Length: 313
Length: 313
Image 1 (cartoon, helix red, strand yellow):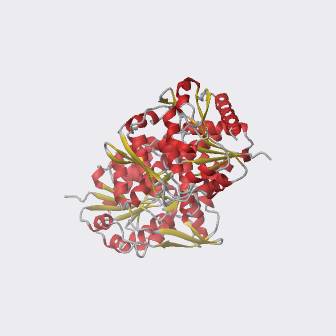
Image 2 (cartoon, chains in turn yellow, green; image 1 turned 30 degrees about the vertical axis):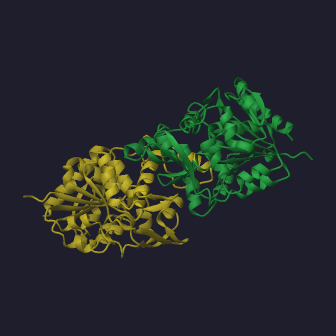
Image 3 (cartoon, helix red, strand yellow; image 1 turned 90 degrees about the vertical axis):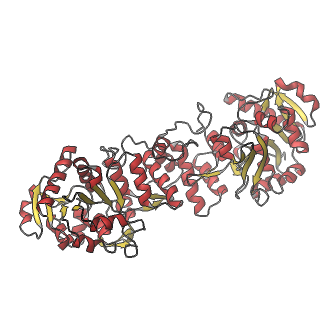
């Protein structure tokens, strides 16, 4: 029997787009999506998991396509009132989005795991594929910048990625346990492909790779490992990937992302416009349109990725 | 110099109406409103203080007059989404209302007192008179009913006051300290009147009276103590007061409320329709229209109360 399980590693918006594409061309049971939790933080006393939520909203068709983040049909009464009370309003929490954070926080305090809560939320939102946090233990991305050490959301949202980045660390990663079903999937004979979604390598994918055992399990898994470049023509589709590369002394480009993943990759999908970068790359390269504007784009790219992976078996 | 400080004891909606009336005919510095906190509870991880909020919203002109509770211009996205996630939706929290609870909870966790937070919220909402919680220590009203012991909001909101009440207790009251400024006001030579607002005696006023020292301080204060009956023609304007009286074996009526307050009262304002009840009463009775529908009604009743109190000096 052909192995059928696709394991996708995802960060925020870009990753969620490809994950949605995969979810539409695969049976639900054949897709497992592992979400970065390095962006998670406590804010206003609430446990916020931005990448899990971005995935949930995208997979449930609840994502806000005008804003490009958050929930569809969102209202902002909470935030408006909070600001009037002198509360912190730099992290924009919509009224609907807030329900997820309040309920998650309540259940975490009762001792449920983030995995169990996420699974239940997905079930209630009629999401087919499994969405797993990379770990049930806290891992927090922190950045050393020219303005000193910053928590991730301070850097990313409050300071809008302005400070120049010198170094990135994942606090707690060394002591955290990768989610057991994630490791089991990597060891499974049913594994068809590991897909590294087009997310920021430094802050979305590397927190996942920093968990004990994950890098080794990916390197030794029997399925092809394939990434999709988050960089098109030297620029990130969204977010600070290219800016960070420059600040970290790396040439911004699809090739640099592949180098970052090193020998983990068997295959690499880069944008058709970046054909010139293919020459210098180690993994087998597939050229394809990687900009995902429409739902059809997402499905098409998902097919390209799976075909490329299957060809590498 | 004529004493000028009016101290009002208030529970929910009825009390807040008279407090608003007082606030419109008195200079802000001459009014101190003490709110019952026996209704406070933790819900969804949030510290909720319904009577304080009812007072704040009424005094700030932010109360929802259509619903008769909660905030004006409220939206319900949070609640709708929470229900979809399987969260508890029996206590209806509007999106704007929620901001108060989230911010209050955050500040309480940082160690601020409920008094300090309430004072700051009132300042930000441009509320003139001081609103004080009766105590910064937790006091929780619990009811023994035919369905067993119930927390207050379980009884009041979730079960809509349906279970027959046998007994009411105020957990924590014996160990709680009355808010110091409340006691100071009761001892003050500047005290012009103590006004017991038309709130439910059993669940709104008696938690305040149960705090150590409060009953004695009211009994011995040098100003007249005057109550307004929450019962008109044997019925509560709102809420379960009359129903509770029957269940507790008390004849529902203005007279029974006065008996409940006993020798604390110097004066008592009852509805003009209840003239027949005046005969049996100990304190000096004033007849007046006590149903407060319009803002003018609130102001008029506030004037009647203060004139009656001043006449008792």
